[in-house]
Length: 84
Image (tube, rainbow, N blue to C red):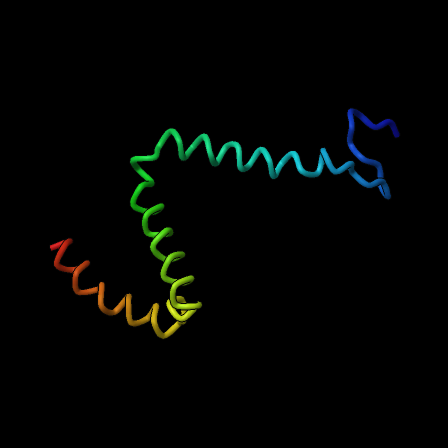
């Protein structure tokens, strides 16, 4: 059987540069998408920043299952009012 291109044969290890290329490509495309649509994702980025801030400020107590459940219950009423 003949092999084509740079495909590794069975038992061969890929070089680190080839293995890291998909990861770098992912972050490059993610950065490009965010720069192009920053207004669309601005609220999600702000929400993530708030979560990270309060998680660090409360030493992890903010992201407990009980607190997330309470937050969802409290915001449910606001969501219904906003939709209606």
